[in-house]
Length: 424
Image (cartoon, rainbow, N blue to C red):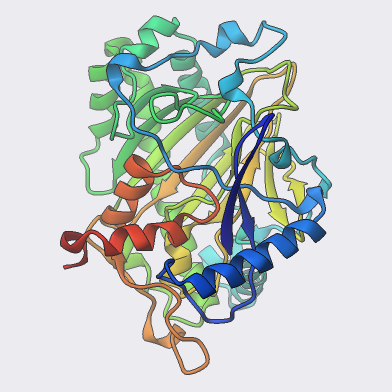
């Protein structure tokens, strides 16, 4: 893909992603006049013939922020207004409607967990087909009890229901990822998402009371039970994520344990999303179109729904089911498998009258793990698609220097090449 930037009188700066057909070619240099001319011509030709329903937009890189000048938005007050602030408006080219419903078969994990060979083979086939097409599938009979899922929603509601000033007391800091955030305004100034989030880190090797300690230190002892619930929930997410990693390895023809070793002691991120109603849900998003920079993401959405994926040149709504977890392939796993599987393009839309919530678990390898595909996925017919990198360097780029979007990896590598200390 190539990014073309342009501005119009009435629209913010737009960065259009255009697919270009250069098989097995990864471009690192951008200063060749001829190459630029060729790419621009093809991109513009594509743009002229492209319908608005298939347009994807990549957001600009992240602008510098000063904690002393941050603007905060209380969405529970803004939701009563007829209009939304300009900072929440998204480019018209990105406000494409939903064109269908995602209805691919669910991946049943029961047989896989029990070691049933036929059921495992069926699950592998479904995962392989989904990941090569759009990088998204849903699992059922996953071993996470419904009571725990509902307790996670119930307990985090007590956090989001706190007065806004109280929530700002444990606000996410610049360069960090843990704590409360309203519209990610501490990181971005335009195209803000209409949501509040509460995030925390979880490592499987932490003590059994790590999250209890976190919640009580941030919010007080009244929130001790929130910590207990999320300690259990994150433990189950870790178990499920390692199971998914085994299934992904098998679907790629690898030993089932291949990827597990990279993730057993990684620090993953648990994020709880709260999307207030929005009277102008047609001009903004709960979460705009993007690919996750991490490895895989486990998502549970409440009964309201709003998750959508981009596949077949259109946006499809993912109907909510309370017994299902959605799995997104992210950029890091795309690199881990040498591009065999796609990083999922997805978004979250809003409701005019209803609150929407979701529980999201971002699965990450250990920080110093070198991300490279196994030799079995690199052969004469499939050369290396991406160079080596560490998760720590990509996380630094995506969290502190860039707004993760549709081509994070493509923009990451030129930056990485200018950071010699990160390459050694």
